[in-house]
Amino acid sequence: MRRLLAVLALGAVVVACSEQATSPQPRTPAIAADFMNNPDNGNPRILRGVYDFAASWTDPSNGLRATHWTYQAVEGCGDTPDGGLVGWQEVATFDANDFLASRFIANAKGMVWIRIRDLTTPGDCFGARLVATGWGTLHYTDNDEIAWYPNSRNNIDAWTFRAEGTLTTPDGRTVRYSGHYHATWDPSTLAPRNEVFQVTVH
Image (cartoon, rainbow, N blue to C red; front, side, top):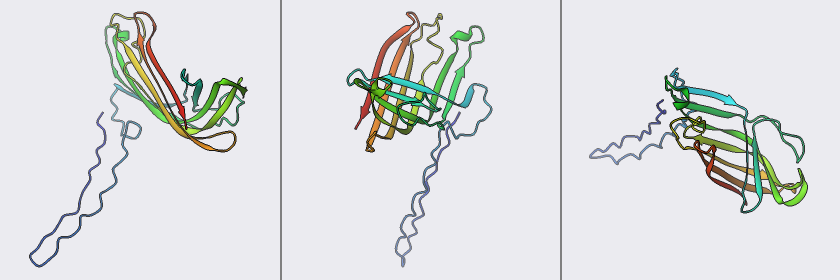
């Protein structure tokens, strides 16, 4: 799939003996093109959809847990509205002889409802203190979605979640959130080989 290219055009500079050069025209704004708005060319190797989604992780350095939903979450801990969506694309390389030797590269992003809890402080949000909630964005990438299945390749799967948003604390203050979870999976042991968790609120 080819990405759409935005062409930036500048006005011509006209110079004449008795005339002053004209100023360049303003640049045309670039098109925000990505896998979510590019035309679908019908390629069977490109799979697309829009899905409900949820992901959570805890930062061991500060005890903050970030949870991200696109749908109505479990009641409690303040408002948990629904209405987010995650656009999903997988680019597949199929192995006709062994499906598990195929490769699926995933890319997904969309709006999510974010809840941050402090697991080190008791509170009324499932036993922990509620830090902040609000809408934000989540972006997920995976270099091979089925590589963690046992198969003869022993490929190492790697995936990353990145999220951010402007959230509101229970007392009405505005805070910025950024989070990230990266993992590699070893199919020979069926366990994560390395994991990095980060939740930052400021």
